[in-house]
Image 1: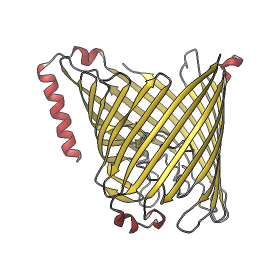
Image 2: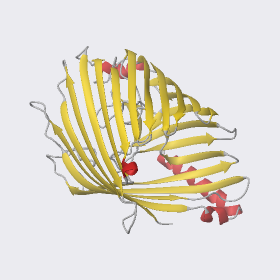
Image 3: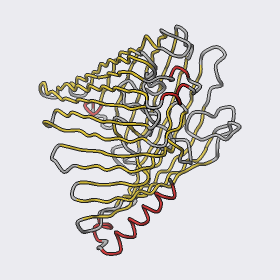
Image 4: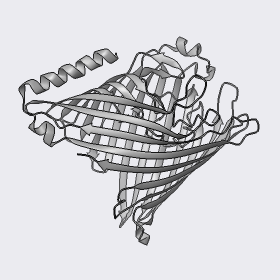
Length: 415
């Protein structure tokens, strides 16, 4: 797959530059370097629990995005280079997801990835081949550790009709956030040759958008998604946002899943509804959410990030039969004369959780975020973020975790 994609990217690149002008390609190009320094401490509090991992590392992400060559069909090339460097870790304290580990559990001193993406544009339709970072309901990349994850494949995005965005794609490999290699797509440790997707979103009005997507991970599962987002203005600085999401998932070649070690995922046939309602009152945001996951098996998704409103720092709340409630509060301190400072707190409580050994477990998680972006001076744009989480599971599940993350980031425009 890697060699085939490399040849496609190279042939597109050569063909695009052999006959057309490079003016727009260069003039519309941009490059940036993102620096992320991150410390993470995960404290397992349960009796007889695992050693508590803690690591500190520095990440570098260089992105180059070209414009398109002139002509009815424009060609372009994007490049992403990522490098992660260990600052403090050990075999005893590895496992936070910041750094990859070797066969003995020892953290690597450094790791990285080089990704190339060929682009072709005709009118308002763009085809991308190579390294991809989609953010769609049926597949999304992860960017909450040192480096972000990526996928390899092809994705077509069309916006020919005003208000309508269509996406069609096939992704063959994934590079996880703490890995230097591209691996086959997989779910619950069972490999798949590819994930294919089709769908899009349509804005009926500036305040109402509906979405539908279909996805199939070959020999693992098939999935349909329906989404609706509505913004309702209620007055000066006051509005209500409704975000409703529904998935229907069924197995596709379940015999392979039944042979997997996690037998609770041996069958997929479930319905997953989740939604949030957020009331904005000037600098305040008050949110409430609910989910119902019914049927057989856990909710299936590629990578690490399900498209769920209850996705949290530690737990995604996607085990079989999980019902959950969420309360959330956010505040923007700019109204108090401190622009750039924000605070948020989220609490998720779940019950009816089912695993291979438990039928009615309980889980809850609390997330607290405090973030600040420097607004002026020579350090303008430097951002600081303190994240803290507490997760508890009971009634058959015994996990107890407290987690702290400290993140310093800066995005430097290179070109």
